[in-house]
Length: 154
Image 1 (cartoon, rainbow, N blue to C red):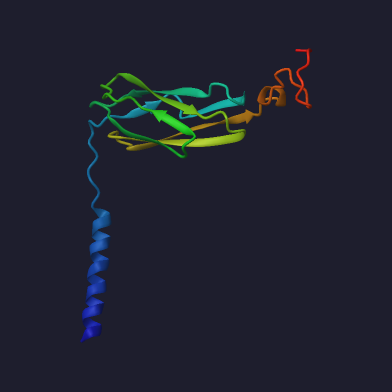
Image 2 (spheres, helix red, strand yellow):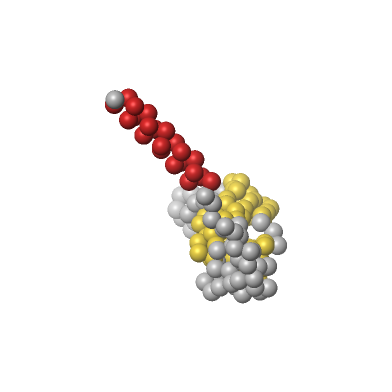
């Protein structure tokens, strides 16, 4: 008897799960649509400590206001700043992104943008390479030689 009850329970749960997967919410035909000019920005090679910021420009091509609810970077070294106000149909906006250029080496980071658009999540990417400052810039001698005695020469 227990085996029959267990079998029926498993069978019922399987049908419930299958049915739940089929029920997807209908797509709003008037929903906003977010279209980016570019979804990737290559900074190329930059020197350590230089400005490493860009803007991702987009347009709402839908029929309702676009609301960006979140912009999450893949790590703390990247800071996105999405617009706070809704973007009306036909209008444009920008998401500002700043990378910490004090980290030396190649980088590739993502920013996941969540909104009320038909495509609720878009992934933006930044990449580049940060070259270390020359040793003289990182550790200036300030006119003092290795013995600690000031010298003239600078």
